[in-house]
Length: 123
Length: 154
Image (cartoon, rainbow over all chains, first blue to last red; front, side, top):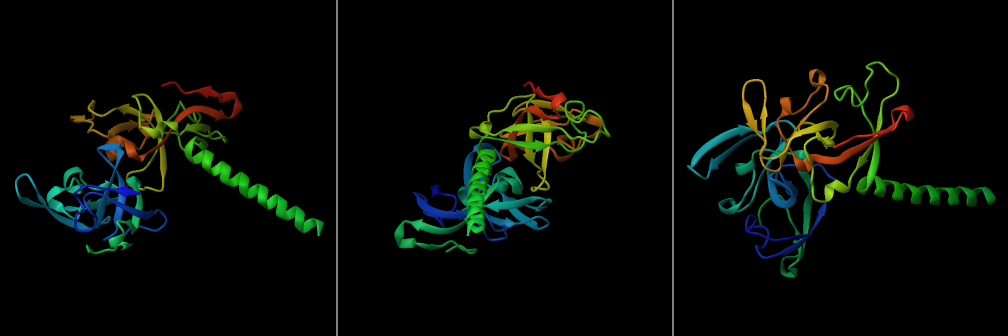
């Protein structure tokens, strides 16, 4: 799959990558996932899973710099882009239902200089 | 041997048939049973009948997620993603829904679903509006039992 955009800058290039994704395994904390946007089902986003159901997640609301804490409800996950300054993610649209996740990103195929696995920590 | 050859032929045909069947039911349409009576009397109108209704689910609508108020849809539960529910869309993005105490606006990219049998239905009045991306298909007809064959209007 072809991915572009600024929200995962530390892990993926903003101007384009081709990566391999899989749908078989269970998603856990730290995975980079492809998901359907809850704001538009025709758009696919790539974000990192920060928290799974039951986790307590703390985040800063961009608009007024206040810190909020939320417990991720059952059947949902909390996703954030690696580059939080420019990312539309769970801090905007709330916890994401698990059913919207399309797959887990495994491996970067192109650009070739960075061929290799995409892992649980930002590279 | 003749028997081994026969078994191999049958296996190959079954495997091919299986792949074709799975592709069709994944992308084009499938038949699913309706469990429970949250959509009574549209589906399963008698509480203790032995036969559950089977319905045809169309998946072409998933290309661009164009739905309308009144569509009956199959969707993955927002709280238990492995379970599928069948309910009717009663609110599209931007519309206002009145619930027990207040009026709620359906956010963009979401829809409000309710069962036709409001007293016995677990739906958006409990788990809130659902993202359209959770929808897995639209119900177009009842295909079983034969005496209940019918088209479900929009």
